[in-house]
Length: 325
Ligand code: PBG
Image 1 (cartoon, rainbow, N blue to C red):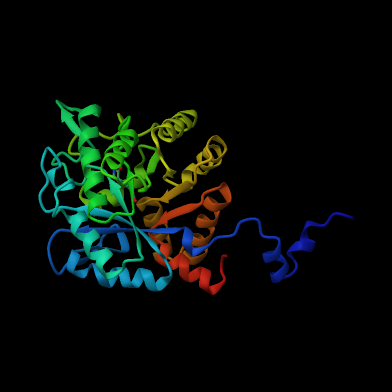
Image 2 (spheres, rainbow, N blue to C red; image 1 turned 180 degrees about the vertical axis):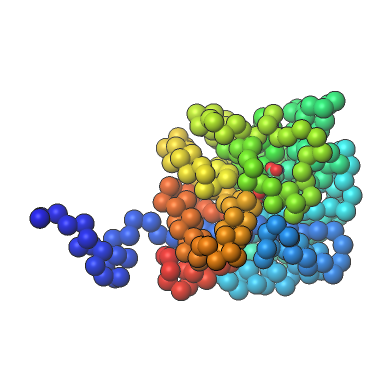
């Protein structure tokens, strides 16, 4: 036998030398939930190990994140009051706006991204303004743009619209530019599927739609060419980074998006992916560490540059241990 693939697997140094995919802490983004109120640090039942924090408790959580070596976070807000107009989404003293000011004051180097969406702020739990029982695209754009601007004014380094309205990236780019924020990047949730994997998140954020579902705005998971259409549109509208979401069940889309655009590609390993691993590990049916490493590397192998995950801190630790790298 002349060709023996096993030759390159015979030694740890050698295996690492010929490794095709290398991962680094700087690619990790940790999603974190902030909630109106004080003294709150409550565990999310369907996302064991993840918490909702009030602004006065946020610093402790951020310290932990920074210490693990993760340098970017994505904020999600849970307001006390929800209404039809999502007015707390763009309020000057809204939950995200206050969290940003606190984060930037205590951890000026931490890179703060915000999720821009309305479902956590609307009384009906949909991601936009309603017209009857329909989510109205064009009147939502104005509210999204206002929300994004208020995040940036409060200190956000980057905004990430996740609502899936048509034209939102252009609307946000326009308002940011008009207000001299020409250098603030937009990471669009470009390829976002209507997915059962978001269920634990909706628990966490209390953002499940009161009626119907999100299929009139989020994508049908039977489609992949449509995802490329979304990416190309967002790129044209001025997106700086495009995201695929969820991650694990959509690795094919990461590969395709990478081929279709020159923008950096991110993937979001969502709440349901986290919950599945946690639950199976708690039963002793799988080894948490090895599954977390394997699923993360799979997304990087498929082609992403950045990875949003509730396991960011743990992954940073596994990198320190040399389990992946
Ligand atoms: C807001 C939003 C959702 C997620 C990120 N941004 C929920 C949804 O679309 O219903 C899901 C994240 C996760 O499941 O971890 N629209």
